[in-house]
Structures are given as structure tokens and as C-alpha cells.
Length: 193
Figure: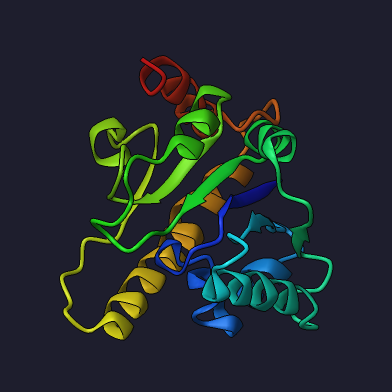
């Protein structure tokens, strides 16, 4: 099972927010009973040096011994790869700086495929989120970007540790992840409208 993050590489999208506390992330990835895998993809505009640096940084992080074989970067991001990802991951991660996301079509596409969104309250998600069709993170009001990143990252880890991962691995007597599937059904019924 896995979490996906794929979009144009731009600093405000904060693709590296998940790596804010590498040891905490490594602990989530290393749990043998509840293994989490993360797939990244993206491409920077040819003249966007910061975007290119982000792609390079994420690629380097996949080589970190704590993340190797658990965090992946898929190269040659295009519409076909984006389509495969929104259909193939279980959770779609969206971590932009609030008030900078225009709409969030990748999250909409993921939701239309039954992929649950784990997103900052920006773009389309504040209107679509109903408390049962995915997860909302963020909400801190800090003028200092480093403090805001720390706040949002802590919320992201907490939601992953306490809600997302447990609900995915929780099974009923028949081995069915009933709580997870209820969220997926809610997502499919409510979000694509």
C-alpha cells in the first residue's frame, strides 16, 4: 500500500515537507506490521532552478539508507504516469503553502479513482472535505515559514501515525479493512460531484 505525491515541482507545493523529521518518517516506514511506501513523481519547468533542485533533493532522499526501498521517485513524469499514480496509490498527499494552491486537479483525479486525499486545507479540498472522505491537515497561522512547515509536518506525521496507517491496516474478522473502505466509499460518493 502506498502514499503518492506527483505534480509539477514548485517550492510552494512543499514536496519535501514529509521529510521534515526524517527519523519520525523512518519509523513509519520501518514498521514491519504496517509498512508504508511512498511514491514521488514530478517535473520542474526547464527555467525553474528551485523546482529542479527539489526534484534532485527528493531523488537524493530516496537513496538515504532509512528510506531506500521504501520511498521511490518515478522519472519521466507525464500525463500517463500521473494517470497510473492517481489510480494506483491509496492516499494522495498534497502539502502546498496555504493560499497558494489554485485548485488541485491531481487531488480531484485521485478522489475520482477512490484514492483518499491527505491534504492541507487549500485549493479544492476545504470545500470537498467532509471529515469522512479523507484527511485535512494544517491550519496553523504562522508568519514565519519555518514554523509553519514544522507545524504542518507535525500534523502530517500525527495524522499518518494515528489515523491513516491504523485505519488501513485495521481488519475485521473476515480480514476486510472496513473503516478504510467506508472512507473510500464516502470519497467516491461525495468528492467527484
